[in-house]
Amino acid sequence: MFPARFEDTSKVKLSRWIYEKNLSGDIPEVNSQILEQVKRWPMPPVSTRMDYLLQFLDSKTSVIGQHIDISQVLEEILAATSLINEGELRFLAEQAEEMGLVKGLEHPWSLIITVAGYRRLEELRGTQALSDQAFVAMWFDASMNKAWENGFKPGIEDAGYKPLRIDRKEHNNKIDDEIIAEVRRSRFLVADFTSEPEKARGGVYYEAGFAYGLNIPVIFACREDLINTVHFDTRQFNHIVWRKENPEGLREKLKNRISATVGDGPHQSKT
Image 1 (cartoon, rainbow, N blue to C red):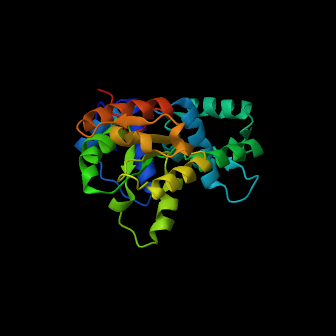
Image 2 (cartoon, rainbow, N blue to C red):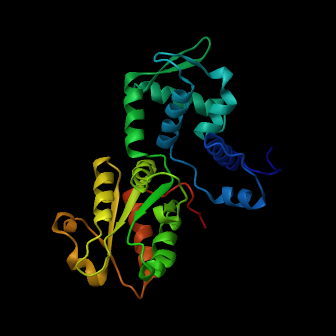
Image 3 (spheres, rainbow, N blue to C red):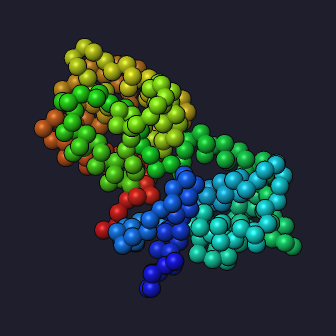
């Protein structure tokens, strides 16, 4: 499966990527370009891998209180949790048990999710802490094209996330339902309040408020010449102020704000 001289950490990252693709119903094609990208991806933090462990156990649990026999799912759980071997898995499981998230049995070695573990899973579902998607709420006008192509989109990608504009997504649902669904799936939301003079973007305010109510981080932005028109309810938040003639500056500011607010994403290149 793995090419020669492909180091352990790269194998782990590739296995997790394949696992995620399979979860979404995709059969991924592993090519030389993917292999090169894998080498540059950062390893997920240990705390994130703890969350991966809980989510995997939850996916295998059909009733509350069910013990999952690790020997039956060892290869799959290593891929799901971005761990190199059983030793790392045992260490992570021991730490999860000390934190009260799981309980274990030794013969056979199995794990069960506790009430505290389910509480953590509820938090993850609420905040989408493992999502790589960034929802962008903004004015879909031709005057914003350069800001999108040279600012918002690459800034989000530089931070390691996948930007989503609802007008660029094909779907068959009502647009309001699709917006709500995609906001819920997102790790964070970028809300840009640039608009026509004296015509506030009501949809942007709604989407930002909806995300905020779900404890999904919101990053606020506005073009420099319109920052004084932002509604007083949101003016208290620290907006990224950008200039129309300098979308590249927006790109850098946005990337830095994302990294400071939610951390680097899983697709950030380490060069």
